[in-house]
Length: 382
Length: 252
Image (tube, rainbow over the protein chains, first blue to last red):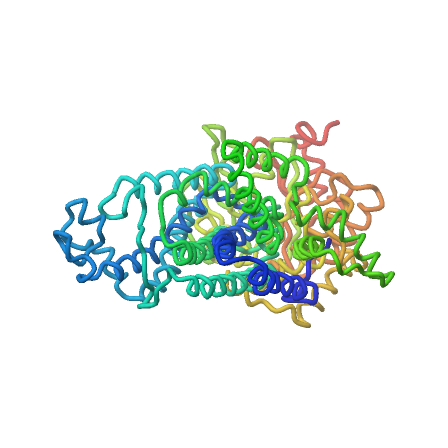
């Protein structure tokens, strides 16, 4: 029940090591290239879910617009890749060579100013982190300084997701419209479409995710993490203990936004396109559901939750495409009504005591990898 | 009625011409009073007299419509809540306001006056100074054995003590307590009176309380509020014998 007071204690390390083994060894060993790439795609959503654990689970700030931040990272990376794929040589049949094809189709004859920085790879990387942080800072300052919170904040972020989708689809010439930015080929001259590149990108993605998890654990175990919990419970008491509550809310919202953007950028690299279908209300809410299923107070649970829901989505929507959305809705209701602490909570309440007993009796059954997965989810959940 | 502004005063806290109106209803109406260094002032009065509103105004929870509140030459009406805390004003709420999901230790630690910025909180180290101070305060508030208990599992009285402890660790120069013994059992009440006597040393205290026995026990001076105005002010004996006070509050 009690959260670890110190950063990276034994329990955390063990849980993190298990996730690392699953992501870096078990999946690559068991899955073929196509399935591994699919898992890599799922894991990009886990970046968002980890951010939501801090922001929503700990800070009590429910954002239904995380897709916007995912898009900021994803589009940033896509713009860089698109510019590289749109060299004058590659696009010589266009009426204006050297600009992305969709701009040419939309009678745009000059690269817009906001696309210019994405010629540079370092600048692209900086913007992938900076743009969402800045955007979250502006939105956060506008809301939290005015003490907008709870349901009102959720509704406003949801509106942001809707606005972002409408804007992207409406400004076809600048954004690629409803199709998104497609036909991406090379990253700094390295072809990202080959099987080998996808394999490497999977590991880069997994390593970045583990890095984000460690950063999230650091925040959770710092005094800032405890202040987030305190704010969720008694905002006024924190305020009258000398803290500027709004600054802490802005910080955690920015952090969740940056995490989401890194995931978005990795999505573009692994999947090879970015489109508004990943920005709007539905994907934003799906990401909240991943977090809830994993257990909203469990950083590693967010990863298990994301994987579990997406595996279910893929297998269900392959056989019964119409039923998936119903299933997702049902799952969300089940999480809220039956197991509010998600997989992590289920593990903690039912499996952990059993395992603890088994460990004490020194009769461990090592043959159950499923239990191991859930155990780690729970270990991270306080 | 006009704000006097931040002039140096010999008082720790000067409230002058303070008025707040909610949709035309003046909850506090042209109120003036002064609190000395190391003074214990009790505010009493019937329900709806504006007692809690006065504390809300001083700590910045409610913004004044007119008037000024000067604390150590600082004009509080223009400062944010957290700035007012940093200036040295601590506030205890009427219902115990503690963090249920955190342990007693963590509750106290959050109020420890260090690392209050975002960066400061991220890099905050739980060093020996923090641990010693928390242990010291936990002893004073009778929660030494409960340091690792979650706030949710404390009794009502223990929660009240914990919140007092959170204020104590903050080291305020002015401590404001809103009904610190309300809802307590007799034995808890006695312990709380003892606790308050320890913590009010070397600081000024502003207390709202209904328990007249308790008021008599601790007050240096009593201010009686009625309908947002001062009805009477002075020593306990003076106030108790004031016919106006007997009429509206103390009863016959």
